[in-house]
Image 1 (cartoon, rainbow, N blue to C red):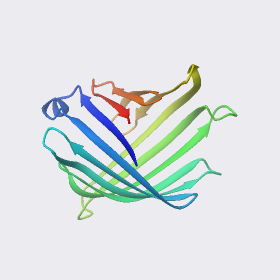
Image 2 (cartoon, one colour):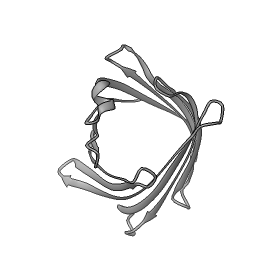
Image 3 (cartoon, rainbow, N blue to C red):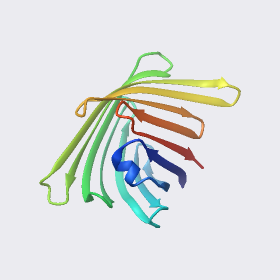
Image 4 (cartoon, one colour):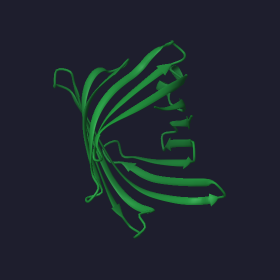
Length: 173
């Protein structure tokens, strides 16, 4: 099981709900290309789960793509279904620099309200940036919301920020 500590800030929504969250993820492999992922998140401010989800993911390594379908429940939006896809286009032959296209489509429990998201991003991985330190930098653009964003990951730490001033930090245990 993978676990992490997460904290967000920088917007009216998150300032009202700032708290430390404990996140857990478990993957069950069906075969090398298919897995069932479970996610759960405990909000330490309220002492209750804030998010639970299950998604079936299938990887297409020859295409550099993945597809997923699942269900999730969270405090704000209740039950919803989701579809997701991601495709990577390597820019360098070693795959350390790539252009990624990804999208999600969320549906409410009655299949009436939908919420699509789509993004494009450049990703650059640097192994042994310093001794025993790997770094990955992503610069992206949320197409539907017209929102640039940045992600910097260093071993166990990840920092995400967008142009609206929202940010979050994650520490993988």
